[in-house]
Amino acid sequence: MKTILVLTDFSESARNAADAAIIIAEAIKADIILLNAFVIATMMVTTEPMPWPLEYYKILEQDSIDQLKLEQDRLVEQTLKKDSADHKINISTMSRGGSLSDGLAYALKHEDIIMVTMGGRHNKGSELLFGSDIMDVINNANRPVFINSVIKLSSSAKNVVFATDLSHEDVNGLNYVISLSKYFGFHIHVCHVAENAPESTTSHHSNHISEFENKIDRSKLSCLSFNELKGNHIKDELTKYSNAIDADILILTHKKHSFFWRMVHETPATDLVKIHKQPLLILPCSNDPAFFQSFLPLHSFIPDASNYSSANTD
Image (cartoon, rainbow, N blue to C red; front, top):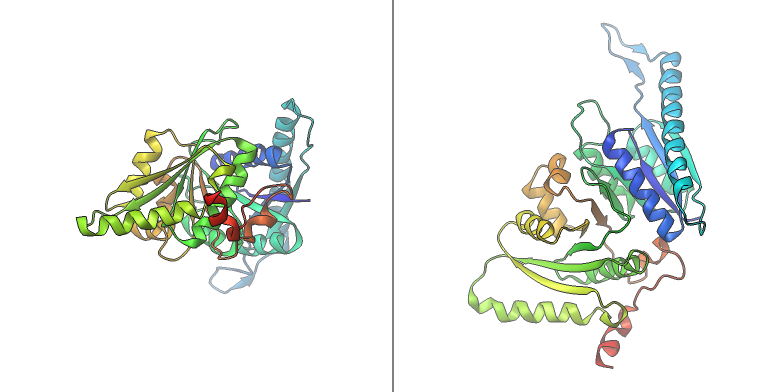
């Protein structure tokens, strides 16, 4: 069964991410696994290094299991309140001693994971999901990663912003988002941020945008608009636009020198989610048009790249 993996440290932002997973799982008929990775040490730091006592490990493990059960019960209660009986979401738990990366790798190997959700950065100094952990997940998941922090995902999400550098890989990512819109009915605002440039480059830029638009079979989705944003700071322009349209989700593709990569390098990674209070959906990068197919139900529509031009000339 297709499954959404929820990484949790039981913080408020992680609970927001779990709530979002319920909304997404209900829409695309998926199950949920709650994963908590509790940190363990092999040695105690003392004047003379000593092995980490086994009873300490057992205490940490039991605490993780107990907290997961509480979160599982909370989410099950949410599903019982929903009117739809179309799909009963199965919610299971997974407690793993070790690093978050190790826990993620184990889940990806043994389960049919189609999306990872996690909380964004929060203020408690001892909690798990900080910027470095967020980047580890994004770099290693090779799945769409949904990051929820301050603003919770609404089940009636109406506006999403898809940031693009007009690359071929973004066509594949956008087609995935088009397929998601089949379940949620949101409007996709495709945004390209162009740095302020000399007038002579404007026409070349417009041609680039037109070429990108022509690769999308827009006949499959009427609620798609393209927007050219001007400015020298990507995060600022995307923030202003997202706030102006009251966006529910900001979507970016993770590839070197992409919008996401440049945003991370303009701003410390630990502050990434604070820049955009809306949830973030970070997509993996692929040149293969069929790459995202395994992350959606089999009846979802993803346009065939080879048919774009013919579809647009009909």
